[in-house]
Length: 276
Image 1 (cartoon, rainbow, N blue to C red):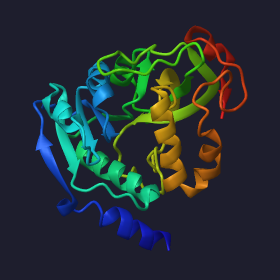
Image 2 (image 1 turned 180 degrees about the vertical axis):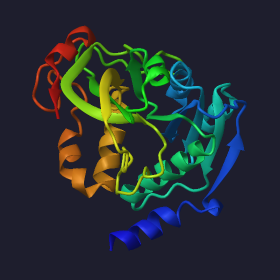
Image 3 (image 1 turned 180 degrees about the horizontal axis):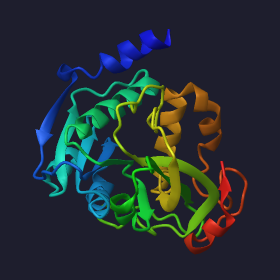
């Protein structure tokens, strides 16, 4: 049944009639670091996101999931963007497979540029540390880089909404100590692909991995309105997460993390990190 689901919802979904490709200004030689980002309606963040990623990668491939704002225009106009894959129609149903299909076509397009490394991130993530130099100098024995991701939180003292054009790095003052080690960069070997439901990370990366660097994740901390939209999205589209996100609705402002632990400044949070 999984093979049939995958064929219908990923392989067939990735056929060319469902998307189009717009060329950007950037070209990269073989052996580069190619960034990948999947987004929908991120105009407030996107210029800053692409500027931030440009310090890590040589060029960026963008998947625009049928945005209805200016995201596509911002991406096409950015000097570091190689191409923008435009989803012709946003599919509300079956998001648990749809996001895998999006990432798979994004990865397939990135591989066409013969990169030495690919680096996948979301629009609401900001990275700390010289990731670019690490990837450029990593020995052949290193096949992947996992980055330690920490959630930023809004608090009663710090909850003004993010506005378009504001830098996102260090935008909030409070972070939860829960640390997720996310595979952000890998060598594009033949065994690697996105094959499972709701796959943020690819499957088939052989390892070993290096765990290094940190990421500030703002998925819970852009604004109170965005918090409610995020809760509703998971409640409506991901049954496995429904109860957790339903319980979070109306609770955008935090005095502790969603896991019941104290919040810390960015300077202090890594020394209190807890793996989840």
